[in-house]
Length: 229
Image (tube, rainbow, N blue to C red; front, side, top):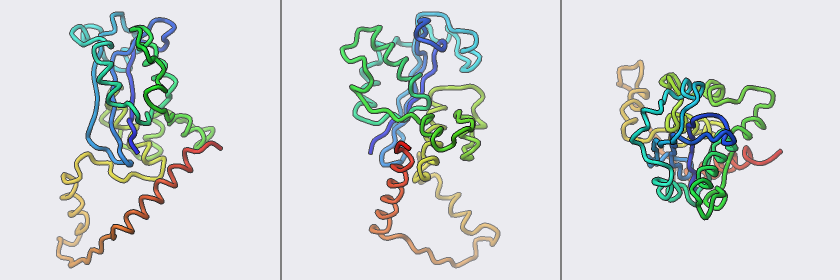
């Protein structure tokens, strides 16, 4: 199962006022594991940025003077997420902006569903936590995802946080780290923590059949969580 966690930053809140995308960030999940593949770019929106929007993401128009325009990156973007399931928080917003950009450039297939399917994690969170705050910030706190390094919103930063939240919401994460090898020393230290590492521990690893059964259970939990009421 290939999924792309996607987020955008924009010049304002509404395409009806001519607002545009100024950053796109995407991360790839395959079988609920972050692969390390990503697509990220800043875009020249050819218009001013609302003061409120700039206070959120911290990007000024001057920062984007030499950035490419949407038609210059559209083929690479569509190739990156084509055929996948897009995982987006408040999908109507991001999908609306992407479709608006595709329409502006006269793309032959401006409907995002012609390129990918869409899973809205905001709708999913509202079903799982009715009556509660379900912003990305609120979900990070609820699922103990560390967002302390995010001083401003950014498409790639928010996509990274959403990937962790989504995996936690839908049955737990199978591989949160992009580099499993880098995590090994910390894990090994934790095993011997408080005993000077002098314990002779027997580690029994799961068989291939047990690991496959575990993955099947995780996928079943994910499907149940994503199914309508």
